[in-house]
Length: 363
Ligand code: T4K
Image (tube, rainbow, N blue to C red; front, side, top):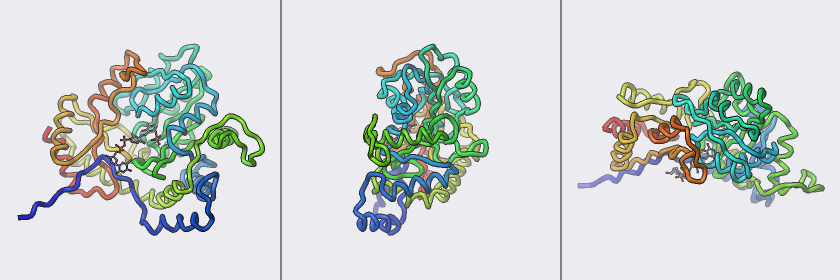
């Protein structure tokens, strides 16, 4: 008798372009010997990605965390920045690393995004900005946040780590706020292995971010100001370019797998999905919410026993981390305890989706 070993199913699996397509970019690097420092592939990725997203310009960086930090630097923020406690730890870390204080406002438990009404309650004389996160690519309530920012003279940054290729209100979600920061990490929809970027409508801000990412040098390297190293290498830019060509297909594929999950899990008692506009979403994650943490843990145990590894994005709620401790955020705390991201990636077979759903339902 033969026993077939089943491959583990992880929460995600990076999309990899056909190897020969990536190698073609590498051959160019081998010919010109340029590995980094504003090389031709970086410039091409910035051009092609901006065009794909319908933006005038965009700056590519070493990762999404640096993108947030450089956005904070370029806007010269100090004091308190109001943000969401329901995010990856990088959001709060970027604020704190830039010597500002993250102040958390509670979330809308259906959209998972920061609730604009709660933002207003947290404003103090020390507040300088709002940093919203488009959680799992679901756009924040950008009009409401914009109105609050205008009323109180605040800057707006969006952590769009998940939200590449999302459009809302007839334009890219990256066009809202003063600066949007994306991640091009291996686990993201569009990957350059490690990478990130900043979008902004003000070309002067983008020029500042370009300078900040390169030790403070201007493009001609004639003057040097404040800066550090936030550069993306040519090796990463090559991966970004090779993947960009496939992005429409990646999104369509994930959307259809998301639909299969919805069908299979529809009507499961005590289980809910994120509320979003299907046309303003990129299907990069598959979050489900249980009616209790106990039930979530049962589902996780059942899935682990079957070699399936979902992830608790985002657990714990950031305000419960000792470093960032703040009280009065019950909705985020509950959401963080009861949410689970199920496997979703290009190439995930339907039979595996059925296995995942069976494990979830068993709980
Ligand atoms: N803001 C938000 C809202 C974010 O979610 C993030 C990052 C950031 C800002 C910061 O952006 P970056 O500075 O990272 O560009 C992942 C990612 O590291 C992180 O980018 C992401 N958010 C976060 C939500 O998730 P982990 O700890 O889950 O990664 P890991 O290594 O456990 O990978 C998950 C699964 O993916 C593994 O089970 C297997 C698979 N995998 C992963 C990698 C890295 C692969 O098959 N191949 C791989 O190379 O953090």
